[in-house]
Length: 366
Image 1 (cartoon, rainbow, N blue to C red):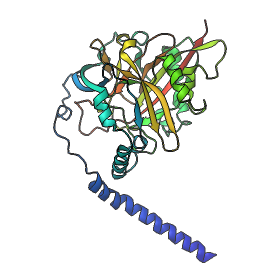
Image 2 (cartoon, rainbow, N blue to C red):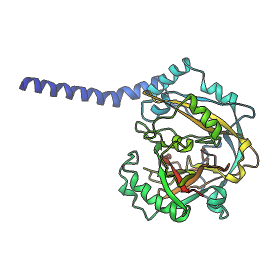
Image 3 (cartoon, one colour):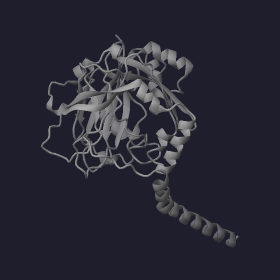
């Protein structure tokens, strides 16, 4: 029995050593062989940082909008959920496999989307922007002890932050709320399993504002149980609610985490809700393969219009929380959003890592 235990211990030690070698030696070798890093050319997005330069981003060229007349649908493979945490060589091989076995998303993007020049203005310099008019605001939560949230990926740990945020939302934005329900959160830009990539240069709505289209969509793709997918049930009217309350809005919540500096390279841009109209949205089905299940959702694609106004908060800090309108019940009002590549950032800044979640605000039925 002792020999067996010693043998097992020795085997585990050898396995651990081989695993360490794979991580330190084999992965870098395979990365260079299968997926060598691409040398980026010097362009407008890689100019030296100029602290005196205006924080208004003028004529930004890379925002991708749905082309007029196009009906879009997106299928996303396992690379979506694995690319942040798995070795580069593995993700590259998986991308090649998925490209052979499905329609190329790259071809689809060129067909369905077009890049337009937009101005993305510094919201900090526009005092006229008010939440009840533009649909978004930056909340100061410097009075919250952020170190109390040990793990931002934990749906349990994050409840401490959500509780403090709910009090702030009730006090500053929604004093009429009867209930605020926070839903599932996700980390973007991190390097752990389950983290998702930043959605860069892709303005969108997380949920279509078209309730009729949503009900038709979910006849083909029924939502998961409420326990695992609160948002779709809340929007469909199938979530448990009190008889005397109704959904008012679904909010987006976005803030940086795990960074040694404010956000610079990939901030979140939001559109003034007053400048976005129903004829500028296209229902956008997406299907995301998570390996053991596939998530189906009806997003909203955004068509370009020159009257649309975009804003962002430069150098957003950890204690600053961006709140924006994902959906408004019985009124077409929402704020399309999307990250972009800031062309003016210090070289030594951390790349953006953020947490995002949504919150459903219920009010008393009239």
